[in-house]
Image (cartoon, rainbow, N blue to C red; front, side):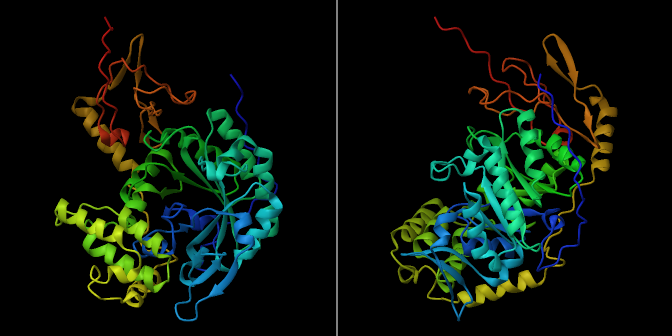
Length: 465
């Protein structure tokens, strides 16, 4: 068995400062719920609405370094929108109101190009994030994204160059995926943290895993504890299968991460950051989104794409009616074609004022403080249940019985690999995550103790004749 790295102490610990609206530090990345970087879906209107409904920070979609180098920065005197325009359309757009909360994600495989790209946008953002986790071919084909996971020397050289080139008020961070083994992941994490970054986001899937496969959040606690022992104050953000503010609290209690990041759920409903997300989007949120998109001069095809993507409970809208609305939006060629849908009301400026009002109401940059559920009280509740007959819960592992044990102040299950039972596990199992064979009996443990439901056992396959 390979020996795990010991966290090396920093040469000079950096003191943490309280977050200011114009200057992020590692503390500004803690105790929050973030909007993940998403191609197309993470455009300016989506980011602004995410901030309105409580996102602590927002990430821009990945922008390749070479692309932004040839862009022209233009400021709209009416709306204040800042556009980095390419030959045919804007490559990146932002607004000054989101600057204190905006992290710009770079796609790069070259330290010099990454620095040039970061310097071009640094006046309009609060942080630079290096994409080291996207497995899509458009990101990995040139050695960027998840390809950097197999080239740690290049990955760390880019981060080191960015930190050296950026002024102190601009944070530098990285977003990675899990490596096949926990040992490999911890070795990479140690090297990344020692580059001087402020924040590390970990998508709890390996490069070969797909969104339909449950995120391996059980591997996060060891990563968080490892980073904290390094003493640098680096914040650790979890990404993968977090769907709401309440879910972020659950994941924090299980893993100990400082914050959580939402991707897919925010793509479907940008109000998911609120304690009370909007349930009906098609007739309320979508018209507002389209109005804001026009006011900000967001490219219509992008606004249309996002509007069609949004989903909600839609309890007051029949399926046929919803399909008709979606088809109407899909057929539209311009904002004018949706005049009837928005009721002829193009008051995007009012939508913008509501967003500004929400952002201005933040205290220390936070709209909804993410107060974790008391771990002690949850443990006490679990113990009360134990006194009623659940004291000795065991997982039958054929030859031996393994108890469900407490970790820190919270009881968690030790089975953390969640690859669907009908599919081969794409990675070796972590030494902290024993995986039971699919045909073993699994007891249904209380969600209160585990923080998540146990998987339903698969029936024993019958032999073929």
